[in-house]
Length: 557
Image (cartoon, rainbow, N blue to C red; front, side, top):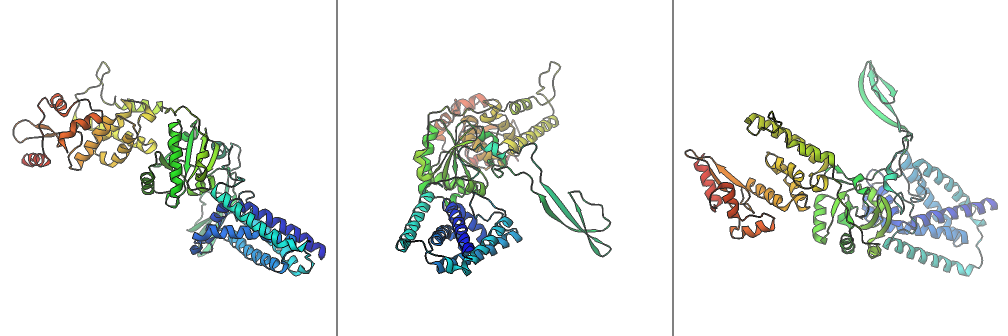
């Protein structure tokens, strides 16, 4: 019995020390796992979620201390009772998790040694047997001499654990076992080999056949059964190959930019899984270093799972000079144990990872700013829609065409441009180069009944410089006119049909007309409002109010 107790003592102590230290290296990661257990549908202890980190730190330190006291033979009764209570609870928890498939990884050894639920339960059953050996044979647990130093070893160990936990929380885990550690290429981590085993599923189809239930199992095809279908259950036979990185994507407005950004030569990612839970001090540090990075030629983007409203508020509150994209929250928590945090990429390879406390340590050399890659296929397609319409014998476009022909052409152009918006966002100079291609989509939308629907997209593209400020001014004017408001730059012309006489063409009313020429100049419009009116309408400029225009329109209805 004594030999068995000594074996159990060494084995259990070593396992608790290893498991405790692995989790102590990453207490924030362990707290995320506890949040899963506390969540709805598992233990339903959601009131504990705000205290998950505090509980995580206490548990992992306690786990390490139990391993030490067991080796020392210090307070053997307290130690074995604590071990027994812990292992009974965790055996129940892992069984519950495995049987009901609630949590896919117990987090027992952090990211260093992921275990399936049933593997975790098996491990805990073995530990339970060994702890029971210690419990019933505790009289054979002889303390290591000298006894006087035991309490000081325990106290020193506790202090060291607490200091280590504080350090990794304020910086980064000392050892990174995750799929996103420094040196990993994310694209390679995402890739699935051609010869990788595929996932296999069994589909159990339940039918009512002549008043009796009948279950037919297939690999996916709907079975031919003479009966009433009731339900189908899916069983995973073989999970197949899952790449190390399987939940990473960079998206915005339902457009996937993952490949595009992972090919960047010099990219800084600001990772913040939840903007509302981010620390203000962290964003102040991030703002300073990102401004410096941008000045050095780096491209900077933020990754978050927060809403557009939260993004807008954070950018304004902290004066952030970069755009945010959407990424899965779990992936962001896995990438970096800091909210916010910094990741430096070089063609998809992680070069540096830093907690915001260490933002000033980010290595920044002077680099060439990224050059936008023109999508030549998209550029050619956009250029081609200008040439839609009937041709003359010499191959030139016929401009004198019927209303029906013009309507059909406009409709075709609009359908295409909407497809481009859904796939790429606005096709500005970043995608298709400079004018005229970068304003083709703008022309099409401005001449359609969909302008207001897409104005937020147009406005954002203008603010990013995807087309000239003069076109941004025209888009803003059109938006204001459609709202029934005075325009800003005086680019919109209204034509009013008269009941008698020629139509009246006029420049739609302008707000603050006395300073309009300065606004036009600032927006890149070379002509004054007077010069513009004379060139376009052939008459001197006349200032109208909204009331006067409304009266003209009402009068000639």
